[in-house]
Image (cartoon, rainbow, N blue to C red; front, side):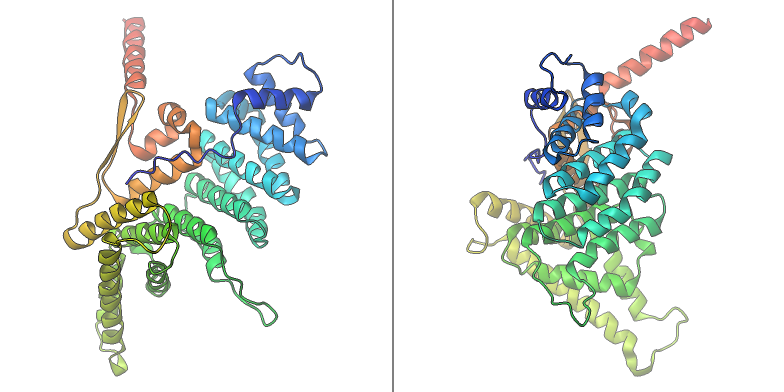
Length: 395
């Protein structure tokens, strides 16, 4: 169930980053020091040449993946944020993708609080604007991941999360004007939208969901289970499992069965809605059962087929018997465990986003420790030693 691939394509190697920064500064005798590298990279974001800014962003990403840059962020938070936003507004597709990754890493580094809220508020508008131009799938995917991460970290209110989810959903259901022609959305973008949307759904309380909107979402996700692209089917399956886990289906059915005031609706519309929702649940169950045993044909590689079968076997077991997949993952010498669809989706999404920096952040990032209820043994031991030494000083 756990994704094993490291989505690390936008991160350069350390040696490449160093040489990039040497070329940025125009000198071969640059002191290879973490702080000075980051300072040079930040300065290079002011350069006019796009390739120079791209190299600098790659260097910043590498530095934030390798270590938790708390001191640098404390001093240069606003500068880095605004330069990355400038890159989103004016840069090439590659520069936008790199800037999105850097902003996401910045949000995860600062953790929840005023800075994270500032990142969210400053980023939403330029990201939303950039998403309107779907000229490049890699750029669109990066923008979606960035929006998901900054909302996950900085969105304290339900309205903020719903706003970001609505921006994502608009890519799949755009509001078409009289002169606008509907364009088929690439499978990679559909997958990215559904994954990012589901990631944010993990933070939502099922009781706050609007029945009509969510019934439409469930219907649409059900249609995605019939698409040819396996990544689309898998992302839709995870999202539906999460919706079932929140109890949304049962909530919608109950709402449609009996009106809030207990009255009987004219024309028995309530019963019609109840029947429609139960029919939708039955349809999804049949789709999941079929995908869990698919023999092949649709899609591509054997690895993808096995991933699909394994996922939908877990979804089927959950829908029929209520069992959620339990995952145990080694991080250093410690074990991280998940026991809900919500936790699994969060873990997979952040693991993909952080790529090569995932283990380092899971070991040192307190925000992620809080998200997953994870305390590395090394940190626990250091905490005990600190308490002992403090007690000895007091005595």
